[in-house]
Length: 219
Image (cartoon, rainbow, N blue to C red; front, side):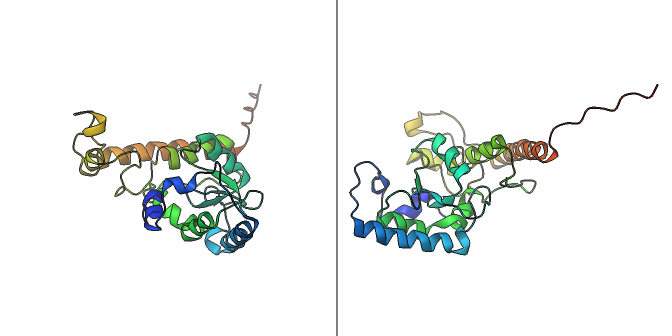
């Protein structure tokens, strides 16, 4: 599965097409876009939040092409619009090309990319997980792209730097000669395992509830 940036280009769009400021949307286009979004939300691929599986998501990241619940949308907003541009599917106005992109991407396709390399011990948060566990999960997934498919270079890299990451050679070009070596697959798996353990520990704490006091010793 391709990255959001590559999928956007494949649809003949660019990042500039997702600029929310100064967008002029006619009532006719608004109504047409809303019909597309309503159909997207009813599709089985998008009936649950992309990040915590809460039923009936009504928020979306229009540049990532995903649907999410209110709680997860707040975390996406905190990451910044350079990562995720959040809009309500029923309160905000949409362009048809934005809605068409959401229809073409969707939660399942997005997770195939962003969760493509999750370790076996990984467990996805749910609506009962702690706020901190959920935020750690979302930032690891989109901000640091810790589980994204290895075949895709990070969006911030291009040219020689992207090639270096793919080959394991020292990064050059915009990062400066000999800036660093791309992390080896073994090292990356080790980091993924550590993050999975951290998230799992937080989820276990949330499931267990407050700690009970130890029983008093018998005299």
